[in-house]
Image 1 (tube, helix red, strand yellow):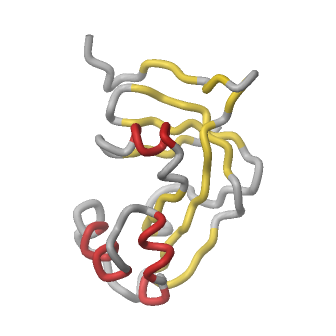
Image 2: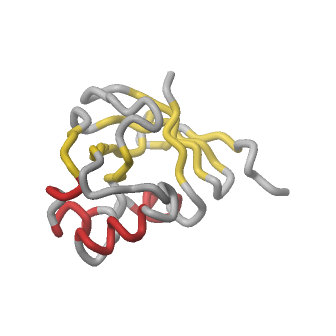
Length: 122
């Protein structure tokens, strides 16, 4: 099963359901997910959830990212998203391919499937 890693601070918005999208530089890690695929979502906040992919991975150039798509991931606009992602990808260019991954927390009997991970601190 594939794993999607999330930086610290993204777990609570995912739990709340306000973050259901992640923008990634395509080609850095395996990102070709299919709708209804189940993957691990490992959060540096200390927990790993099973995530359900809600749409096939969409690929486009960073230059074609819309403000609406950027706002879905918590950015002000596409320019803010590009600058924010340069933290993770310092060599990022507008001509690079972007992966748009849509997901939700997978549940069993309306309960999330979750486990502590290597980032958990007692």
